[in-house]
Amino acid sequence: MSDTMDPMATDVDQQELAQQLLAQAREQGIDLVGPDGLLNRLTKNVLETALEAEMDEHLGYEKHEVSGRGSGNSRNGTRTKTVLTEIGPVEIDVPRDTGSTFDPQIVKKRQRRLTGVDEIVLSLSAKGLTTGEIAAHFAEVFGARVSKDTISRITEKVIGEMTEWQNRPLDRVYPVLFIDAIHVKVRDGQVTNRPVYVAIGVSVNGERDILGLWAGDGGEGAKFWLSVLTEIKNRGVEDVCITVCDGLKGLPEAITTVWSLAVVQTCIVHLIRNTFRYAARQYWDEMSRDLRPVYTAPSEAAAKERFVEFSTKWGRQYPAITRLWENAWSEFVPFLDYDVEIRRVICSTNAIESVNARYRRAVRARGHFPTDQAALKCLYLATRALDPTGKGRARWATRWKPALNAFAISFDGRIN
Image (cartoon, rainbow, N blue to C red):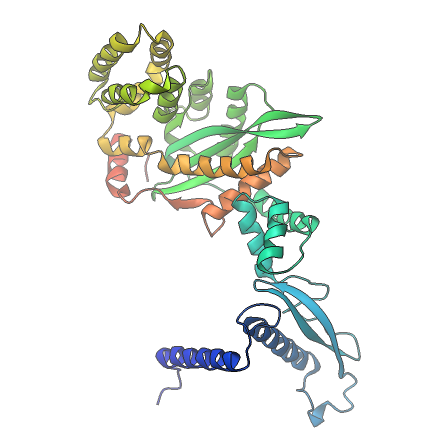
């Protein structure tokens, strides 16, 4: 007969145990949650049992065992301690020894929070809640007082993790690299707008990989981007097939300086968004329909024809829009030469926009930051929340294999 435990029987036993506990709690009028609730009592019992087991291992004998007599160290009662858990404050009795050498690991000395509480704080912070809102959340939901300073200290723990993430080795090649910047308010004597640069790559496995976050000094954008892209290259990125960016002056030259074979593509979403800046809101829907044939054209010649038609209709009323597209034309048309699958990846900006939207929501909730480091920490926590592994990766698209085949053919020898 096998000695292994039947998983199905284990599930049934656990379910029966849970039902028995709930029935007993109802009979005794005990709530499920709360300071004296069932979950609180179970947590207390589990923690105290684990601490007693640690004490047994530390002393080398179990409680009340004869072998422990005259051993030189023995139990010396308990001390009461309150720890904050995911279900609220729990009061536990921590065993002590006469030699004062017991160093528990389940609930360490001077530890007032279980690790799950730290994860809750980091999760709430990543979702855009301020320290005051997180403190109010704990008071309302768990009935526990957690100071703003404590919450700040918990979030400060990710600084080392963020530094390691920011300097991790990257893939050798990325078929597509999206680069963008968001602006945050930093209080440096006075509140000023500071750019934070974001680079997001699409790996050969079809994953969105957030490569890093860089706080700019507000100076010349293209020059700073050159240093960022050089850092990315130094971290192992030898080649990028297509780089999608906005129309910042000097940026295409910065990109090709780092990766000479990279194709520079203007972000279609940015271009369309900038188009609407010059037009009255009442014309946006109509203008969007008229622009669609331009960026979905089968070739550059066809796109040019459609753009002439667009300019004929809107150019006299909004000449700045015509000039905008003409200035961006050389960086707009490259993707028209590629397979529709490659176009879909370049124009499929939902993943990019969702990242930016998450960043903006986290930034907007805080108003402004005391330092650049505080802003980066906030954005890193938002990045961390996007991927439970903390690597900032997520699946890009379900139809990645056709796109990968198209990249392998169009960029022969560079995708492997």
